[in-house]
Amino acid sequence: MHRRDFLTAWAALGAAGFVQSPLAATVFDAVPLGKPRAFDFAWLKGEARSRASRAYREPENHVPPEVKKLDWDQYQAIRFRPDHALWAHADSRLRLQFFHLGLFYQTPVHLYEVFEGQAQEIAYDPAMFDYGKSGLSGGKLMADLGFAGFRLSFHTDWQRDVAAFLGASYFRAVGAEMQYGLSARGLAIDCGMDRPEEFPMFTAFWFERPQPNSDQLTVYALLDSPSITGAYRFTIIPGTVLFMDVDSALYPRKSIERLGVAPLTSMFQYGENDRRMATDWRPEIHDSDGLSLWTGGGEWIWRPLTNPPFLRFNAYADENPRGFGFLQRDRQFDHYQDDGVFYERRPSLWIEPKGNWGRGSVHLVELATADETMDNMVAYWNPAEPPQPGQELLLGYRMYWGAQMPHASPLAQVVATRTGIGGIVGQKRTRFSWRFAVDFAGGPLQMLGQNARIEPVITASRGTIEIPSARPLHSVQGYRAMFDLRPDDEKPEPINLRLYLRLDGKPLTETWLYQWTPPTPAERKTFL
Image 1 (cartoon, rainbow, N blue to C red):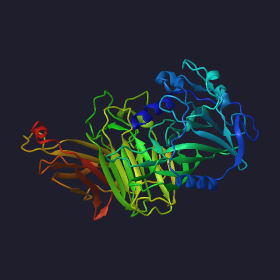
Image 2 (cartoon, helix red, strand yellow):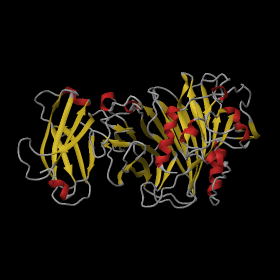
Image 3 (cartoon, rainbow, N blue to C red):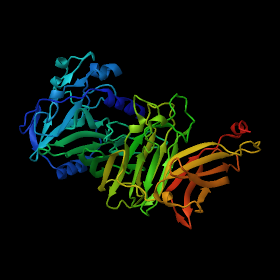
Image 4 (cartoon, one colour):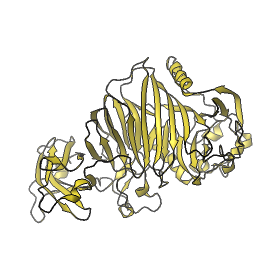
């Protein structure tokens, strides 16, 4: 399965109905499969370690042909029945619904309920689903068909879910805006390399029955792939900002060249900074507009996303990072004008490491896309030392999904990046240059007097900086930094830019990083 398939199918979450089930408040609410077994996180880690010592085996797949060949509309017609949600008839503020197999989701996952230390597998039951116009007859499907994944609903609105796990190790969640957007994964293997990426899969989930009136759900997951196995524990607390506390234990089967921890996946087609693929009537189309980094040394960095003409890979070296995430800072409807999918409501996602992660780097992979149906942005943490067989990697982190992140720079933040042809208006251009306008707001900028001598600090890996300036921008109660970059050669390689504002030698803003690809010599002549 490819990223385009995952994102396209995820769109179903926003359109599909949500359903729950009549599950009594007994030890086990759903139809059981097999006998209960003792379960805890220690057992799950042992199971993952044991599997890593054996050769990888592809998950068994006995999905019947009529399910495999479902098209988009047929799969969308399958709805989970609300009265069959797990814990629907219990004293619970949380309920679970299950995804049917089909379309892009052909590999069954095992689902278990855990109660008082005992795990009982949940059997597939056609009574859970309304098959509508899918063409399927539940009574004719195999009894042990299985499920594709699950989604979580909260007592504040049983009709809409707040988190969902579906496909490989992908999952998503929402904050108060109740609008899905970017997604996350359990793990990434060899992402952004010159060979096919490996997609580890969550093959089983265990749901710990919540205490009455509890807002917290604990989910365990077993991850498997040709290169690695893993045991995961997710503590999920819905809210204005949905919180996930994640503990993972990873066991490599073989040496892994590029391990991606806490991977995030998003979509950026175009925005005010990058109009290369702006062929749509809407002013901007993106789930996230930038990568935010809080380094171990305390620096805050903002890297606007771009839609490059080719795969672009960047690594931001760090030691014991304090956090990183894909953010959707621009939350004004008129900047998107989409009253169907509401890009201004898309959640940001912040990763906060627990403990010290040591040396490594945050990787940013940007892929080209012609439309909004492909999640072409990926970010993750890559440890400096490649994992080796026999190791146990214990990594924990916290995830925050929503509009307001738990941490922000005390300095001014970037609120907009715009680019276009450089030069002086009214004067004939004798050489090619490209202009960058970066707006900063917040922090100490609001306290500056009219005569403050603000200095833009600008560096470029190649080329010459021209016409640098920084002046007040009252519309955002901040400052606008502006400069032109003139390439000194005809090389097509990207140019790295760095900018921040300072006063009396001290920074006033976070650091803006950008990577710009100069046009070809022939293209440059069209601007003269």
